[in-house]
Image (cartoon, rainbow, N blue to C red; front, side, top):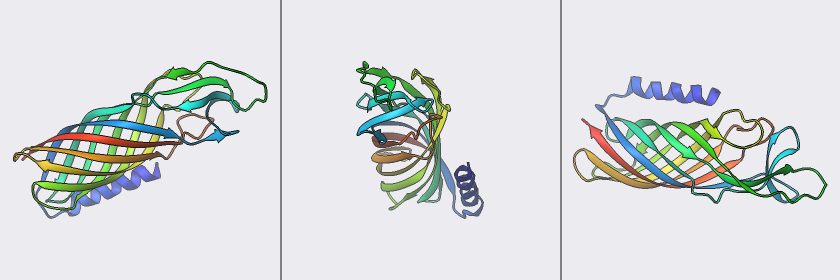
Length: 213
């Protein structure tokens, strides 16, 4: 919560003290998300979803995970700006529901766990060059609000990620800009009440933006 308040304060400061003409972009963003998970017991990746021992082992995020949605950018002059939006993201995984810390021998059947989120990013970006070709660096937070989860156990319904992004954008016309980029994000808070939700995501993204003059 403190991080979100600090981010909001910084964005307000940029709005108040910017001396340049500002303008808005609206756009569509799509990314293919390569998700990895880092938590193990006895050498096996696991998620505790209920109590201190019950959850999923053998976690595999090798699913068709992606993020899609609408974004906005607000420029302060040529280079500096803030961004937000509303995105839909799936973070599905395969795992076997079992007592992951018990010594008893079990051979549970893996199943696909569907996890879907409404994502609200808040970030600051900086364009390294003026002109038609714009390399852009961006950093901020992603608020993930759970809208579907068929995992057995309890979740908090929300978790927070931090991300950093590098993209190259090209201005085809005065109003139309397209770009490709790379996004790396990591969790800051837990999704499940009894476990560290240690997700790391590498995303390759495509953006189309329309400039509102």
